[in-house]
Length: 143
Image (tube, rainbow, N blue to C red; front, side, top):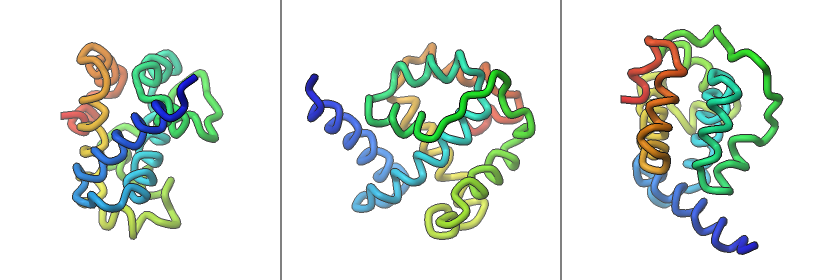
């Protein structure tokens, strides 16, 4: 196993996200933002879709996705709108939310940036499947 290759791909993903969110020299912040958004997303996706998504992510990003995960057979239906998703992200990252995400509008931009980077790292079909798994009112996050 070439662990250095896995680390390199994960670092490239984080570097890309850091640039996308406008903090190219702060991969730690990019990592916290990525972790938070992935954890809220995984709770909203079906298990099948979560597994399909992580199968296409770099190994280190898979580890972030599954860290602390307690898979549930049914997705969290309380997240029905973009506002709900943003609020869930801010609550999930409670201690660092102000520093990492700022206000709700800034948090929304960070969330969309995460999805733009994910879109570049998974197949078009998988990205469309993620969109299809989310309620209609969450789809603008992925546009």
